[in-house]
Image 1 (cartoon, helix red, strand yellow):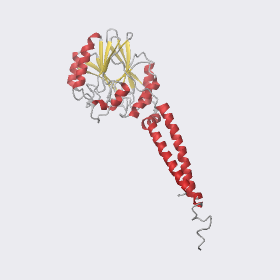
Image 2 (cartoon, helix red, strand yellow; image 1 turned 180 degrees about the horizontal axis):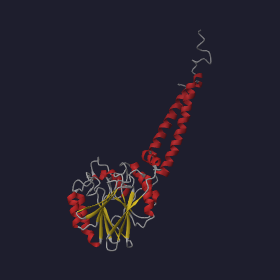
Image 3 (cartoon, rainbow, N blue to C red; image 1 turned 45 degrees about the vertical axis):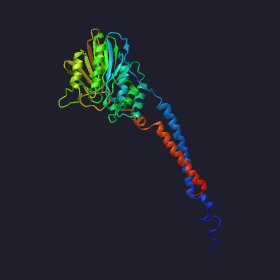
Image 4 (tube, helix red, strand yellow; image 1 turned 90 degrees about the vertical axis):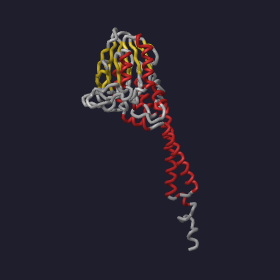
Amino acid sequence: MEGVDSVPGSPGCGACGRSAPGARIAAWVSVSSAVVSLLLVAASLLWFTLVDDTAPSVLPPAGEVLSAGVPLVFALVGDNRKEGEVFENILAAIKRSDARFIMHGGDLVHRCNPRQYRWLLHELDEAALPMPFCAVPGNHDIDQDLPTVAQSYELYCRAFGPRRYWFACGNALFVAFDDAAGEARPDELAWLEQTLSLHRDRYRACFVYMHVPPVDPRPDHARRVSVGREELVQILVRHHVTAVFASHIHAYVEASVAGIPVYITGGAGADLDEPETQFHYVLCTVEADGSLKVQKVDVPALPDADNLEYLCRTNISGERLLALALVAGVLSLATGVVVRRGRV
């Protein structure tokens, strides 16, 4: 009996234990982890090159005077958020029109985080727009939980430039007003007053666009500016604003406030508020005398073929793939060491 434990090839032999099933499994895990790590590294490099390689920003013509013929045609959209297919169809249709530029009423992304903005910039890069894209922030585009305005708007401003600005085109002045938080704050109102005082008199028409409308004419609804509304309306009236454009309401609504026409469009992809409304954009025409014509253009509600791409782009990043590759590499090395030492 004394020699049983020392018989070569017995289960208790440490040297032969390395060929046991447990060691073979560990070796398989080591090789598989190494392969997975290499694949993840390759995927992350492709992701950085093909996915994250998009335009860093899409800036409006802030403070610029654009040339234009008469009549002037421009497009208005709002509230696309995460529905890429609808938004793509709208941008493609606008490209086929005579629009000189696009105004976006906000809620460009579904959630305020870097991956959402990266996806949106990729969509705009793919659209290859031949005209300026002039956005204003919406409540989904900012992080209202952060302590300062600069921090709340950091991602938006990095992607789309100033949160408030003006530009002119042809015989019209356009003013982007920031009320993304649902309020017309005193500093915003002071800026609007100053901007209109400096530039309004030089143009036949003047349009102010914002995210949250100053009025919601629908029965039992109040999706409008909550604080500073009266002061905002007074400024609009005092400077003879031709019309106001807004989004926030996921429908097409025509209204007025203190005699000023208000056109609300939020049909670029977000879930619609009104059952009879279709996804849409708006084409506006400014005549030589400064008068305005507005046309709502419906687009088909096709299945979102970009849904998988959206989920990948907004939930996966090159950094995450590299982190997974690192974990797989460490697992490969650890199991390799265990196999070599024969401790499985």
